[in-house]
Image (cartoon, rainbow, N blue to C red; front, side, top):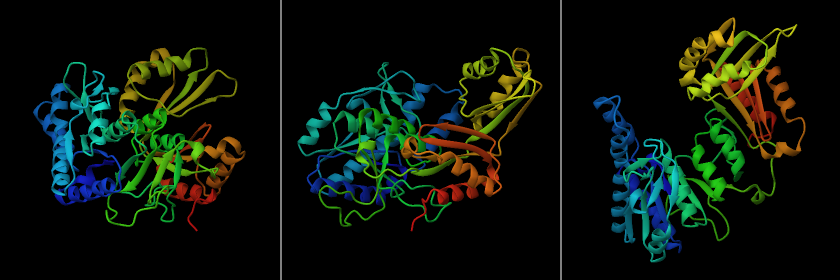
Length: 412
């Protein structure tokens, strides 16, 4: 069971979490719980580090920001003990959850789940501080923002759990953002691949790395709301309460052609005009960007009549636009382009579904529907199970609603 910051935001909510955990214990389950810091706590800790020194030591930064989860883990253990449940808090190094040496954004290297399994088999609930582990230098290392989801899936894999329940402030994964489309439907089951695409393309329910980990280790993940009453009637044996199960596609009996529509406002467009069309030009553009660790996503190339010149358009994270423009300006002599343009007023809208593999005409339906609404497509990118289009940001809601409707995803 994993609980995010809003679920443990104050003492009352921590008591509510304890009630959820107690319910699972009383149902006969062996339980480990992973917790985030209280909502806002990590932001405050990060701000203090930056205020003291903008160029702070990453190891000391980790020592500070990891304390948020340690507080929550201890408080939840106290709440469980007060409710009559045997519980003990665990910090990452006590498991141990071993990471690489990249302080502040460490990746998990190994977890020994034996001690946790032993304690759980004795009926003790393990309350684990998420987002943290121990680096090769024997110091606390944190996994980067959103790392508690990753901790939960990794620990679920290490203890060979039947399921990893991610409790959040929504009651599952929806066909699209319900704030834009009020009649969006909650999905009962979503494949790992689809969830990975949705998470990376703008859906905020799960962190991308946690979905990758779940897919690699085949950990079934169940997204549900922590604000449901803990004493509400639960589903019977073999069935699930309200929520969304992220699982292998073999577990999904009826596969929709399109599962959901995602959108991301974290996009910026870069265009190089009249670039000499010759061998090596792509390498001269994207090599310097790669060297600067700037991630490039959608790419389109338009060759001018005669073939002497080409226009190259691509997207980068909006926070990297200024840096990307600077890198390309510095490389102008090598690339040999006439003009460089950048735009922030764009959004990426994506159609996702494993059913696309076996159905023709999915893309043309999207393009036709957008054209009928007067929405111009700047860039197109496709994969086996997704179609992404870059459009003007002003048309975001219209595009999402249009695509949601045209693929029959609206609730009846």
